[in-house]
Image (cartoon, rainbow, N blue to C red):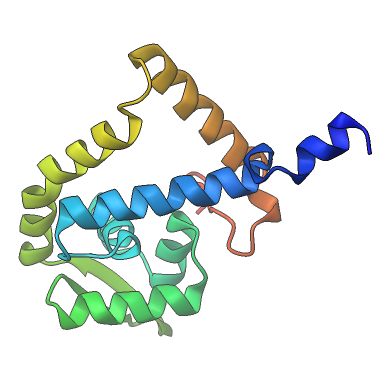
Length: 159
């Protein structure tokens, strides 16, 4: 077996493995900073909804890149917590328009410092220049491979 093939047997040479580990670390730091207030997906949905009030569940799921059934169940949990409201859209009774509640807005505002600490902690091993480069490359990797996802991201301009 040549060295190139042998290197591929090392998990640390597989981008997917390293991305999974980075996700594990990110989620661990998220839970440490957020203290169980929200899950990462709940946070992403609520933050996106705050920026796009009145959108429907399908659009919200696309903007966060999760499947629609997961989006619906997470929205239901956020509604139970009093953080968002779902209302039937009169001209399309199968869809629900979503709005963040005052409690949801207050929670996001209260979590802002924790979210900044999360980002700082996750990227701390990198210099400021490396952080910018890493974020640029990670964004490129995700966007260029978006079509291969089971729940592709719907860019805001395409939603």
